[in-house]
Image (cartoon, rainbow, N blue to C red):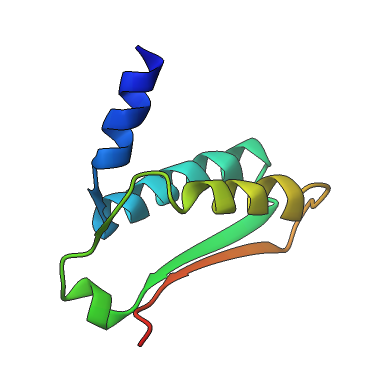
Length: 89
């Protein structure tokens, strides 16, 4: 059962819009959990907004989660997490 779930997830793709929405929800909840010890920005360049971009789900989330866990650990205020999506090349 677990192997099928992992296989299904690896073949699925989500839109950049969905990934941004998921990250926004995650960071919003973490911000509440940490008593607003940090702010965050999620930026998508205009050229990416104009095209359909798809990639595997949960590609970016582990990096953002590590930023919260390790970068904001012990912060009581003035933390900042910035996530940027831009086209390269």
